[in-house]
Image 1 (cartoon, one colour):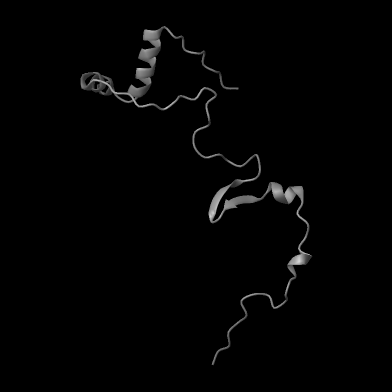
Image 2 (cartoon, one colour):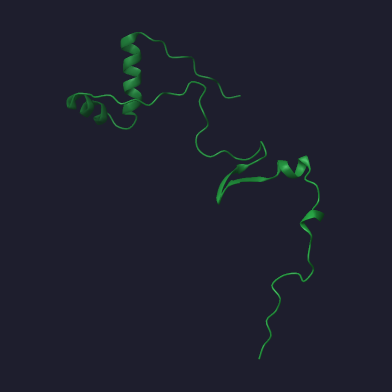
Length: 102
């Protein structure tokens, strides 16, 4: 009958003998909440999604006449941004200057 091979090292390691955590080790740590991966501790860790805007738009709910909505949607993609532009024109609010890439 075949014998079962040991699954790990036969040598016992005392957890009290673990090395001290250094700032470098902590900087490379992966942060978890339970089983969910949150992020990597380093500043170079890639961020998910679109970068945050300095002047982020606010999400609201607004009711529009069906004809107005149909006309805006008929113009194609970007109709929600066009609503913002039309409201800026109607309220005479200037658009902030576009930032140039560095």
